[in-house]
Length: 348
Ligand code: 5AD
Image 1 (cartoon, protein in one colour):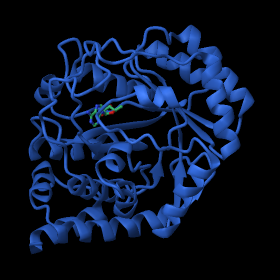
Image 2 (image 1 turned 180 degrees about the vertical axis):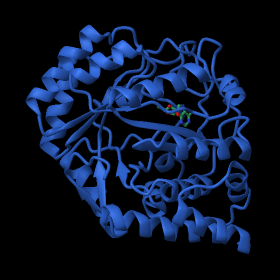
Image 3 (image 1 turned 120 degrees about the vertical axis):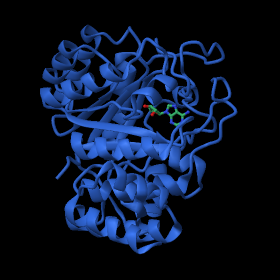
């Protein structure tokens, strides 16, 4: 690690801001040493705010039906090999019941952009979940919707919304997505969500096709300026039924370095150690936590849904479907000095 890189990482910890050009220097200056140094500062910051606590979120994959055709995603509309499913509201409630009994106090309803989940389906469902479990937070991750829809869902009880920005570069955004999706609209959705009062999560893939250090620098600058409550990042992993089938996967090491940098930019951010990280590397989720992440999202979806919600190949399906599985996760985390807690886990 050069003196310059060390100085930039130190300054990021103290000032939480760098220029676009400095972010690029940090990214191009990746080395094991630099990553180690960034992780040590990120861990200090995380400890200062969250102690050794790791929050868990019960992920419920409600539908893999999607009207979009994103080039990277295994559940894209034109993938005819994808066996489609959607959970009914009562199946979703059953997942929540099960999750609650295991100790989950946040449920994440995630799915493709499936027209079935209109406001008239989601509003009564949210009201039921919130009245059954007033001590729980509900996070939605259902893609782009109108501002009015976001408002209705918020008033029905949704607390948080995850909508990855995918890339903060307009041209790169266009290359990853069909022409029906736009960078401007994605950003507008994120601003609407923030405006309405949601705790908002953005995020991006590391190593997505065509990604450069300029793009990653723009992602970090965007996070600095947008100031999200949460940020989901994970390595890109190819899916065999997408145009990116032959592209190589993103780097676990670079992902961990970026997790540390994001912790330094926004010390109190909620930062998941993602399934994609755990998929590429046996102890990937632990590596994420040790780089500064403080959230894990075990999967509460029914077994057949889990198998079909294949955003990318070899997706890790081990979740917390049982008390035993959750206990195993607890042990793995405790082995690295992290404690899984049963709490809503709002940002501090
Ligand atoms: N590899 C890694 N992450 C992916 N996602 C979608 N497809 C892939 C892939 N092939 C991520 C996107 C999306 C989130 C739900 O999953 O960033 O926002």
